[in-house]
Figure 1 (cartoon, rainbow, N blue to C red):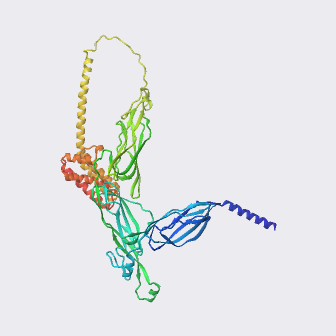
Figure 2 (cartoon, rainbow, N blue to C red; figure 1 turned 90 degrees about the vertical axis):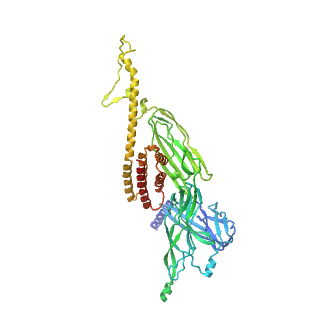
Length: 620
């Protein structure tokens, strides 16, 4: 008996120890309301309120405006317990459900319900329910039978055709008149009747000319919502969305594109077999349905006059800020100026702002970090530019403010924002020296040769009398003639340099065609390998390199405007000049444009070879 009592005591103690090791985790109280986003007048729907605790009482629903409650609240409770790593979690949900019907069309806003949970008063979220009118066609269609509309099809014997009004794709834009580079939202939305069992959908990406296109990432999974359109109630879903940035003024056409839907249709069994009729009176088959979106025309207005040199193509709403790594440095120390361009607009297409630095600074190409995304149908975020410079001389320098001009489509005017101005204090480097170009000047005491130190010793100064006169002596006349000799030598050297540069420019111009051909061969190889980005980069290098060599334009001044001006100066006809500028524009924007990349790359390659041949024949 004593042994039995001791055993019971040990088991009880072990159980208490195990239970003590399990810690209950208290949950935050959550009280939420749920209802359909849209309902139809006269049709039933549910409104539910859920609270995640057992200790809930005094539930009070809000005033149900224009909504008739048929039943409720019906209360249900569900509970579960999980133990993970000795931690116990109790999950209890109490649900209050109403069955309701809306009596008037419009929009109904319901305030939050209240409940007392864990001793505290908690309020749920508000609800907004859109009440749609009844379907005006459904009743007539049921009485008279559905007519065969354009696009309808009879998939199989005994199945009902799906008409063009039963399932279609609608393309819409948020505006039909925009400025160049202004964002435009293009939406493709599916409309289907509830009776249409759409299984899947596929489509081609729209090929829009003279427009930069960026697809909007939509939430997954996609869901259907109820919408009233043309007197009917459809289930709708946003299928794809694109943000467009028109690159040229004039009329922009968004072409119609094909979509292919797969529908599950019911087919009645009319074989006459009694067993088939009893066990399988009907079956479902998949039927393809071809849909086509409508074409849309957009009026693209040119940007007005008022651009300055601070305009880098920005269209939207922007702000700019900057910071500097340090304002007190020594010669040969690197300095980083960080510029942040933020806002909403064509961020991806904005050119790199040109920041002015003192002339004797070593300036490196800026590092660019893009941090933008598509939100609300707009491209928003920021671009970070990091400018690295190295001052070579001691002194005080001013880094002027960077001005950034952009066009605001809302106000229809240009606006300018700018960064701060910085004063940079540059001290001498170690040893009191500073860099002069590529040579570092130091004190004599610091001068050393490999394997041998050069030491400077004080030499006693010995004075002696000299009765000879300097004036009129040979040394005097040599000193008088020396400046003239230096001037003559300098002029000769300068003329030789000019001649060498001219010869070099001629050599570059003569080899421009052969260098361009080599680069085009590399581009053709990249095209065959379907390396799109590298192909367009190599094409731009080939074209810009050719025109820079052929027209003797320095790399720093190489731009479409300078190329156009130089071609006209050399009496190149207007049509080839337009082809050159058009080809540069196409190469610049083709890498971002959707569509048939292979066909586009072939076309651009052929046009480049043709344009270079025309210029070679024109400029000898």
